[in-house]
Length: 295
Image (spheres, helix red, strand yellow):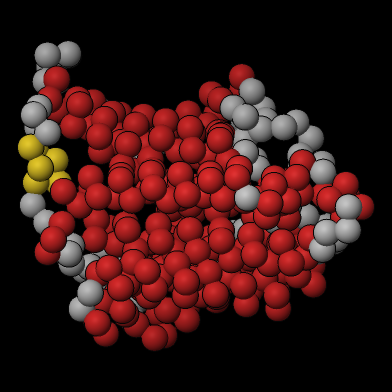
């Protein structure tokens, strides 16, 4: 026992924090990829998260198969991201940083209101797939099988993304572009095509985060707003444009929120912002961010 809290409850809450944090990571990586390469603060990212949940709900109703939904959602959300990049964001490249920020901020409301017109204002439950229902005995406590699945699938996605960025020539171009886009252009590489792909990958990650979170949170038009705020906190704490920072900060924030909720529930929603303030006071660029990136 620690302060009246059993060890099993504490460890269970740590697992819960890990699962929550990894969902943050999926969203934050997409934000970091887009910002790190394109210097675009994508305020519509939460709407893509919400869109992914609704696309998963749509495919579940159409096919009744969660696994089909899981494959379909990142493709559909990534495709929408490609359309958005080409026709709305691309014309703003080279302009003031606030221009794409304001554009994506407005796009978020367009997407949310469009969903309300199509599916209504009330939310929908998203059934956990039958193969992933029930608890798993971890030895110290019972933990929902679906949440373990979310942890495993998210780790796999992060690993595959790491392999793509670290071990492929296109990944090398993306990493090079985040550090010195001018030098990449001098080498004769068309960065506009890379931006196009990265925006699609980033929004696709937001979509799959949405469908993974749907059985735990339900599906409703405003579900992306809170997640967007939390994802931005993770990106800021980890450092704008840093993928390593997004992963580490996402897990840390998830664990801190989960443990705080167990010890003092009233502080559960506030501790994420206190954590951000503390980190920024000590290191204004975030844990792994580069100074001057927004200048």
